[in-house]
Image (cartoon, rainbow, N blue to C red; front, side, top):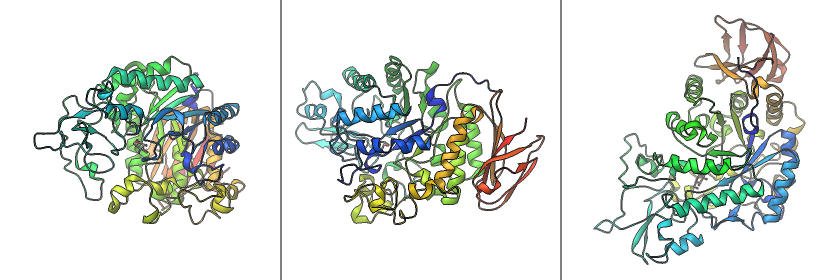
Length: 535
Ligand code: GLC
């Protein structure tokens, strides 16, 4: 049985992702900002989260809504200023909420002074800070690599007669991380924010940071389907996840280790076996390589339970797990699995072993909002218009109350709101014992109170094509059985070779709470329960 040894805050805690444009506007320009987040800290404290991760707030031309940075140590005026950032940090810490920022080291904006210098001439000292290549003899790009947001990843520069590489938009040139000056500059950015007192970084596309030294062509993806992004036509074998990236990750970890209690979370879309390498040998990698299994796999009980076990089994010794249901790049969980299953998903996220990340608005069951074509903002949506790839629907303003624009702004919101915000909002759900918000809050509270749920071991019990079940256990504390029905039909749980006795502590259907259960348990469709086991 798992001994309750000391765990670190980011192991016990729950992270909440804020997309700052859409959380709370304080100056009525229709875009969320830092003072807005500060105003809502009491809510986050009430909800019970331990840390917030704020998507980029830095100076940026906003070609990719802040993921194109033109100054890594400056705050974009849309979001506020440094004084307002300091206030946010102080106020969050006063409420025991840690603050994580988004570090985007793979690429800068094409308006960053580094790139302006780099592109000014071939012999500029910063030329090698980015990835410049000659054309092929026929003038075409140096290789076949594709950009995530459509088209070739190479942009021709008329002035200096070379191509530069951009894994995303042409306004987001990739830095050359093999250059020690680049390494030093970005590690100093990390120190700047750590010195200010932030608690960690979520690191954007960390697995893209080093490219094949020979820039070989990527192979064709034999499984490409036309609805997919054009990027998926090739397998990014040579443009991402190169072995040398781990040297860079290690450097970043060393910077974090110069301080105490900092966390690094890497954004990595890779299969489990490759993901694990980002923990590094002997804890030299990121603390948490984001685990996107729940976010990318079909909602299927057998597949998910196998994957959970596979992930648990593949973790390095003392590697700490983590789970994510939604983020600002993917459809929200409610829109993938429906509102009833989203409740089951919440229970899964908040009872698995490992740090959960909750995406703002998921706690009130916000859905993807259809954005009329003329209003689409996301470059991924605009560049591949017939593929339904816009990320705007999952980035709409937070629904606080039933007032104008759901209390988000009295100005014109940068993205339209869900039409049902009058009914679905924080205020309406706060005192409703059956709401999604109450479910989230109670799950969070239970997880905080019970060591078995926050840091205990994970023991798979039984799963089939409808349900997943597991026990969470910590020495000297109550154990819990979690039972989740991932379908709309009733199902039966019968623990084979295991005696179960206990009381339902928390359920997606609260009427079940307090009921005692034993070895055979019936669950209705879309139901999930947490059973406190009698010792
Ligand atoms: C990451 C971010 C995404 C951004 C991209 C380029 O995937 O999460 O929003 O567009 O990197 O920076």
